[in-house]
Image (cartoon, rainbow, N blue to C red; front, side, top):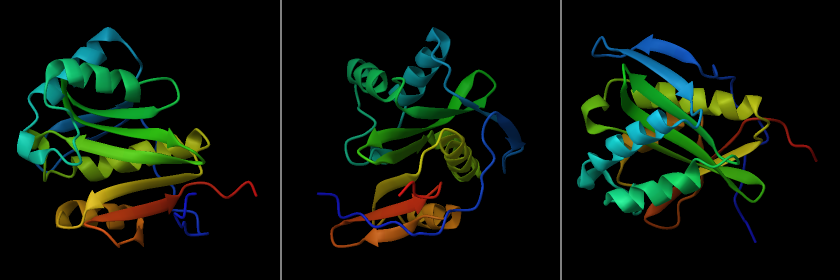
Length: 180
């Protein structure tokens, strides 16, 4: 039984990808939906393979290339929504919405070389815009409560804390009105 709570209020609209912007380091970043081609997949593997192990949370992203490939196969399937932040041909970040019952779970990863430049905020907003356009009603995530930067980012985007009883916070947002 899911006891997750969601606000009745629908979040502000977000611009869906494709979109581009200049980050705080003056780099041009493009956010595009994942299209499923081999080059995109390999670029994602490369980003995750070089991901700093100290930035892994809750066991993801996995640490070995074979496990990264298996994990990506699962979250890049047709039922999931994925957006990639590109700096030229290099992946700067990746965000995914994975179906979970009547909602979607959000996960986001920004490579260390691109953190603290505003990319995470724009990437999440783009993914939520993509989700709204795709009919996603509710989104949730968990974040380690000590990760103040991430908690602040999620609150800025519109997520609200729905459960704070463990070492992780559960946060939720409503993208579309309820069908009920």
